[in-house]
Image 1 (tube, rainbow, N blue to C red):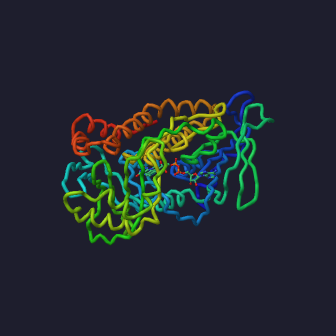
Image 2 (tube, protein in one colour; image 1 turned 120 degrees about the vertical axis):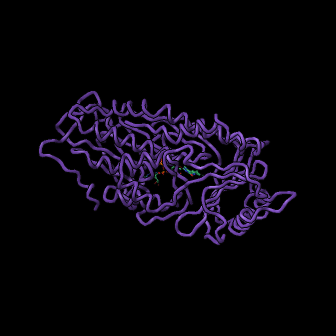
Image 3 (spheres, protein in one colour; image 1 turned 135 degrees about the vertical axis):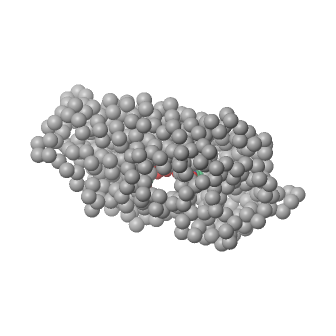
Length: 426
Ligand SMILES: Cc1cc2nc3c(=O)[nH]c(=O)nc-3n(C[C@H](O)[C@H](O)[C@H](O)COP(=O)(O)OP(=O)(O)OC[C@H]3O[C@@H](n4cnc5c(N)ncnc54)[C@H](O)[C@@H]3O)c2cc1C
């Protein structure tokens, strides 16, 4: 059990909800449930466990031993690394211990012609990181141990009809048994891009497809040192991306255009078909791309498929009782690696606001959620629109040479600096 699992409480200093509003008076325990022990959920859980008079539990559908590589690898932006350091140095250290630093961003053609080389230090105050998805989860979950209930899948949430103040009831299956929590004062939806909480309380978000397939693969590093820091390679609009992650592995991601809204074509499941997308017509591939093309051909059955998509931001639901964070609040295109990055920023802001606010005698959950939305909305919309703008070279008919060179110009670099440096501070 993590030491934070048992928040210190002064006798009598326990809180309840005032009739007819989501403000709190000192009389009862505040019940807070976090849906999902993902990126955002774990960070917030740790912070809330420090608030006296708050009962916190984080419900997670996978088992504690789940080491799924479904996301395979992530580059997390310098902005999230900074936000985490300022908010929770212990957690920052735990995550960095499982990461390699991200210092440069290089873009070439698949024949090896270099187009772009950017030191991250020229646009950010600190490096980003490269990490395996499973290791990010294991670091975050390890530091929130004792707060997470695994094997617990949320199945329903609704406003409690017996609560005059609109508290919530949650149903779930835990280790195969149905169970429920009633009288919830604050529900934090950190349940990811297919958020059930959002779907049940606000309807499924409108998803916009941008006409690009993304595939991801994690392979043992047999490259002999060819691949290390973050790089991308274009053959027309078809793009490879790769970097080395701890555990002697290389993360490879590829993209190629499709009709917006179309499914991933069946032909893509064929290794030769996929490999051909990245093989230049008139020159041999560079040594780096030759190695990656072989890996794609050999490991096509292990590939995870996705499409470039986004959904509109939404931070608050159900009369000031539900706060949405991360992908549940805003699905963004992954082009600039800002999905988990912004989930971390979200969580650090929410954690700080709630930790300060819920500890006060006159705490008002609804107002705190509104404050979160006011602090984050502009930054999230900027991260979303800039990520989409940066996807120009991935679309059908794109000119990757002109599009990449434009990214060395001031307008793009100024926005990148804004993204990497201007984190939201409470
Ligand atoms: C192709 C692709 C590449 C990406 N690359 C990057 C990248 O390089 N860098 C980056 O920053 N981001 C990247 N992302 C985005 C990133 O993965 C997400 O933005 C990030 O994981 C969101 O964090 P979260 O906390 O909102 O949700 P998640 O981390 O998804 O966590 C949600 C949690 O909720 C749990 N859950 C869901 N439903 C339930 C339920 N009903 N009951 C209980 N638990 C539930 C899940 O099991 C999970 O643990 C990428 C995404 C894609 C699709």
